[in-house]
Length: 83
Image (cartoon, rainbow, N blue to C red; front, side):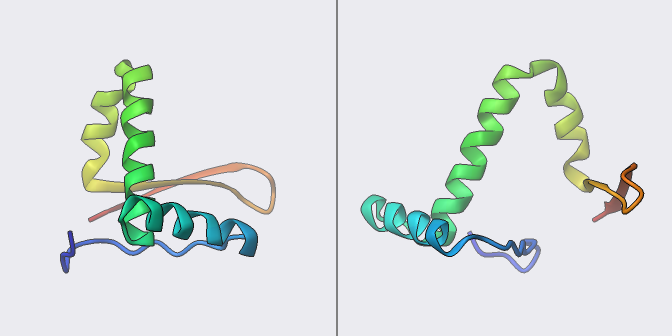
């Protein structure tokens, strides 16, 4: 559902892969955006079911965005932003 509080996510995607969610969305009666949100939610539910001990941490983190990436020096860098 659209809300002015929703966050935007931009990704780079291979052109061949880009067509697949659109095709699946058409078959399932969703928009491409709706299809991607469905797949993300489905994967999160699966992750939470398989990692029940981490579920509380995920729920606690719902107010912040955690990003993990490798710096140019190949060190893991963690940072959080509070919404």
